[in-house]
Image (cartoon, rainbow, N blue to C red; front, side):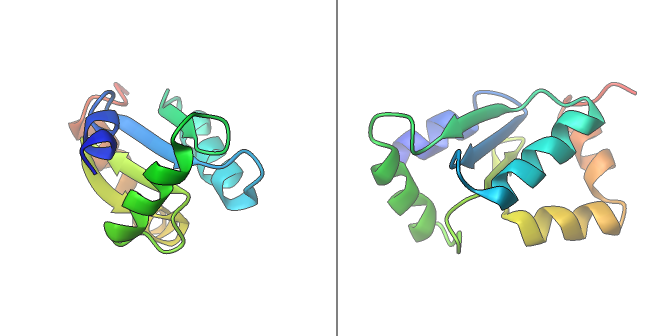
Amino acid sequence: MERVTKLASEKPVVIFSRSSCCMCHTIKTLFYDFGVNPAVHELDEISRGREIEQALSRLGCSPSVPAVFIGGELVGGANEVMSLHLNRSLIPMLRRVGALWV
């Protein structure tokens, strides 16, 4: 859990992902299209990725990926991110944490 907290606070936007996950790809693309440069941790490509994935599950991420942190706080997965985007809350949130300047 401590490792997740540390990784989640390294940049304004942090995404825990799996390289083969289509919803992870969709969420990463959404942020890239906004001009955000998130820290992306591909759990199937890093050591102790399985351990991190289990910690994300304990934090309430279901499914465990994608898991998006904004400003060090867990936002949630694809459903939560898309809901924020559709109700026009995501961009202001990204601006507040310094992930977007425009």
